Image 1 (spheres, rainbow, N blue to C red):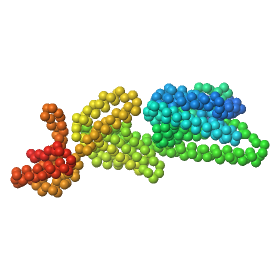
Image 2: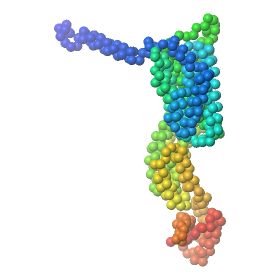
Image 3: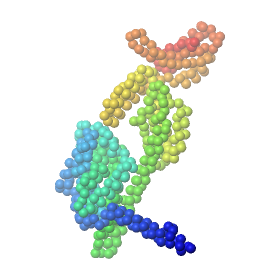
Image 4: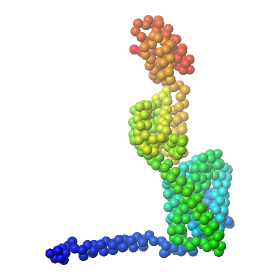
Length: 484
């Protein structure tokens, strides 16, 4: 009976074996397809690749002049805020040669090539910085363009661009018949020359933090391009350099390995640091979207997102989230406290300092309205960040020009209560007055007297209080009125 079922049914041992064979065949086909698609060793010319990389290492003659020209082109492009010119400088820059040489030499234990690569790389970097410094120091126009400022603060994207750009470059160089378009594309993407020009710019204008940030970006690019080169050469199994002396061979192999590890440790640390900073800024942006960006000001108030400051600190000093609001409408303290509670719900923002800079109450509502209209009118005409910053600085100066006239009402009311027993309440406001020739804003105090106070006593106390307030606030335009 069972034999008959197995012979005629679908669920037989033979059919199960057939399904398994078909599945294995499918896996084999997929594996073969992926192998043919991604395999690069068979089409690699190790000897030609090594020779071409080594030929690009020397820095003398034509190469030195090409580097100098590319530095000037990049500096002019950064100064003029021209992306096209900066890209042109990247294409002709010979800086990539020694970096690939360092990665190759570490991978194949070639200590002589490593020495030459380091020497030429150092000369190139020093010459680039000096040339850029002299250009920006002597050139009369030294605006802090967005192209320059973009090279002063690296983030996780710069690390990934440098690493994957380095991978693409070495793979292209290793292929039989080098793909020139890939080499040009990597030169543009990794952007080695602009950070060095920005280092010279920072030193020329006396802002070493610009130079430090740009040099940090350049070091990131260098390390991760070199690391990518090292990994690809190892993966492609380039032949190691052999030395006749076995003891020397072991010594050089150890030195190359230690150097490679020494490079990879800061590379890993840098990636971790930049990655942590990126996570912090991502959560900070999400926090801002849920709080200040959806907050509705009732009247004369505005959140200036261009001036938001997000600073990540990894250590004892807390990170910082700083917002700037302009106008005479203050965000209530209970709202700010609620935002602080919301901030603490984010794991990476919990220990960060949260600060809101708000404009004080201005003595002219018309002034704020005028600045608001001016801002809206000019916003569409802003061409770059420099103009935005300039306009915002003008707004801040306009809104804070009369900060000396601000009334410390809380302390004034406490002093008035202590010195004048007949006062039951005190109010304050700015009042617009005109004689039809000019418009003026006058600070007005309104006094509510206690019941039963005689008129002559009110007049005496009011005169005395007016004299006190004028001296206390250094404002002779003060007026005192009786509250109705």
